Image 1 (cartoon, rainbow, N blue to C red):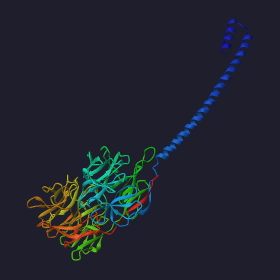
Image 2: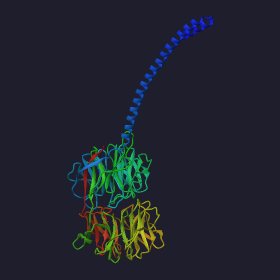
Image 3: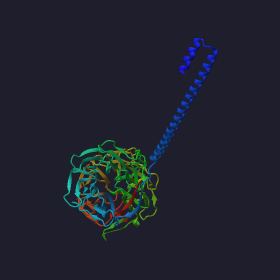
Image 4: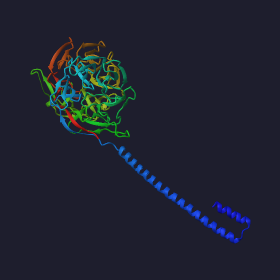
Length: 614
């Protein structure tokens, strides 16, 4: 084209003829047309090639986007929930049990054939229960080492003890050793066995496995129980609240192993909260725990995106209640305690030296009589509802309904009202209800402290009760019922479980720090230790001469102390008497001063469940 243009310019400038110009123009037109066609062909070819390349690229990108969307959909879906099946009983003696740990071949637990626990074991495939020898009969099992070679126990002297020195006891024989100054009510080994975490009151401590280098990890809002390490050792979960009761009212908490990031788990799941006693599966994918009589699983690691199901999945159901889940070492089984709770109210007959059914053997504890003996109040077991009736069982009337769980009802001296404490939230509170029924109402609305064990003064003007739940914050207080004013009993710091004597002269209470019985004389305004003995559930005799109580250190029994000369007397042997109740134990007094207990006629066995997780 450039050559043709130059030639055309020369011809025009030199004055060539029009015919030559015409010929040249024709040649130019032909050449230009040929170049245009070539150019258009080249552009068209390039466009077709680009279109093919773009089509291939777009198709590949589309397939990639579709595949990515399918992957994201599949990975973002909640995992199929885990399931359990094949409920196989491993024990058959019916005794109350508390699962603790396993070494793979054996399961270790606390068993209560009577009032005090025995450390026991059974094959993971079932069989006869064998008891483990420990240095003292007052030791209870807290944890099993990761290799199964050692047991971590607390020497909890007496059945009402809240804590005890920690010991390491070899399973196959050898010398037990005290773990430094460590003491508490719950403990667990780290996954590598090099450290322990233990709970002492509200405080969680971390120490080496021999108890050395102990330091406080965190202070919680309530007493801590059932600590559990995550399989990677980075997280510790534990329980706060009342866990020794038939229906625990605690909440699960989590803290990092360095003491940071303390927070509640599942804060808005149930109100009041009722979660307890959790353990991780060996692969760390699920956390299993008990709540409201069943076992639940919370997914920890859901998929490759790191997402997990946000809500727990219920694993068990049926007529039995299930508690204390324990995953097997191989992750194929889930061991639980299955229970059918049932009691029989019994009265001790001194002439026959036997316990005989009382009030037709109803399944109830917290039995309380009006001063004239004409009316009785009780809490049904295991339903947990407060009823009242005539002493012959007539004119029955239910006074409370769920979610209120009443404990320890006490009649006012005029027989018109009943005071009790109850769990309608995470903390126990004092309530009062009329004998003829109606809505129970809180005695001290807005009080942020825990309130326990109401006890009326003989004139009905005041109620003694305990505030707080540990030695550090427990105090005996007096509520003026009419004036709605509260005063503190002098010198009562660290005491709980007050009982007003029927003659109005004394208060009795129990100290957290020691096993003894304290007596407060209103005339002198002083406390006196009248007996140094482990005891629980103190009850005054009708004439204020004696205090009856449960004793469970060596030989479980009902005992009493005579106030006049502080003499201890044996009343009834409980060696072969299986007790139960809201707190697993209870003692009451009939109008004739004979002891009342709730005999355990239910069944509690360890079951193995097949664990199936996606």
